[in-house]
Image 1 (tube, rainbow, N blue to C red):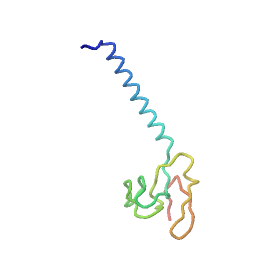
Image 2: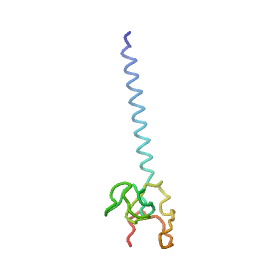
Image 3: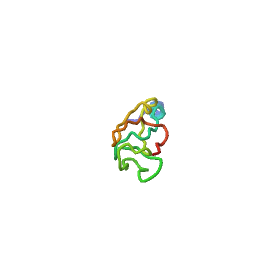
Image 4: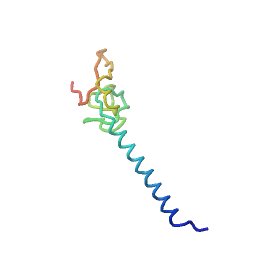
Length: 98
């Protein structure tokens, strides 16, 4: 059984439209996230600015100020963590020194 050429063209156009819609949604979701430094637990970071934890999941300590995690835009600086010494600190849009 042969398929009319116009049916194949329509199917290809629908597939292309769905692919572009999916890529657009993924890009939009990615744009809504920001790097938030100093809030990830050991081994749960998405990446880092420098040091021995520059790959996802390689932070050796909780709340390393150089390690970041992607969070929804607008939530980073209000995210509070409790450090080992009991002090509280909020997430930062820049690496935390010291």
